[in-house]
Length: 84
Image (tube, rainbow, N blue to C red; front, side, top):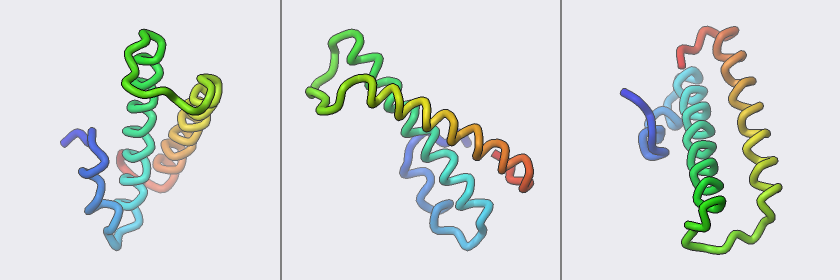
């Protein structure tokens, strides 16, 4: 099953198994990153249905940090034997 919505991670996040919680964290960041990318694409096309309060550079910075964080989580998953 492909995880594409935050609601799909609820059981994993509340699991007593740290590997399941780890996966939930990874998927949540991945989902949020994709939604932020979509928002910026809409912004570039003047198709947002709201006015952002932060400058675009702040969102771009956030994307970079989220990408870095996902890479760290992938590395940890590999080291800790967590299948993503």
